[in-house]
Length: 139
Image 1 (tube, rainbow, N blue to C red):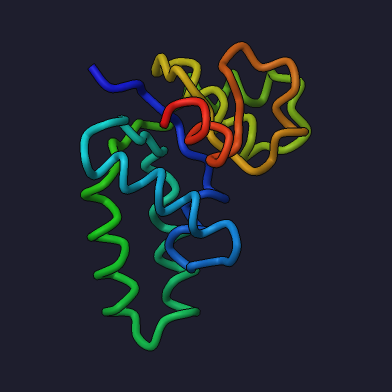
Image 2: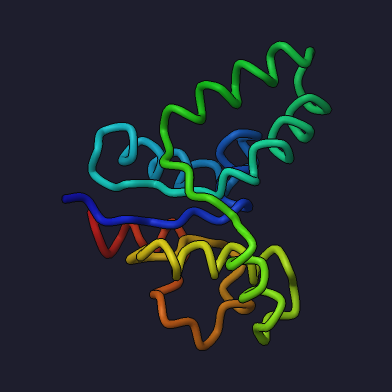
């Protein structure tokens, strides 16, 4: 069974917008997901943001829709519900998005949390690492 890996929004944006130099490890991570070597998990709640962002960057809303639909095929969606939001609000996180994403990962049994924002996840019970570090540790 492949490891369950929570992928933070910043990694997704790096991948979808080809934000250099972060896009290369992000693409490698999602390539591994496409091959079934990892289970890349993202919160379902990230999709409206991704569509909004891409609709501003791409030539049309139809193109943004297509990119988001293709991305959906690479990932496992995990829900954000009342329990997760309540846990996030009661946590010590300074950023609500980080708190919600961490709670999603924790409740859904993620083995790794992949982000570029390591400093905001100090003290996490789940191993938190960059995409580069994950790819080096699990080649």
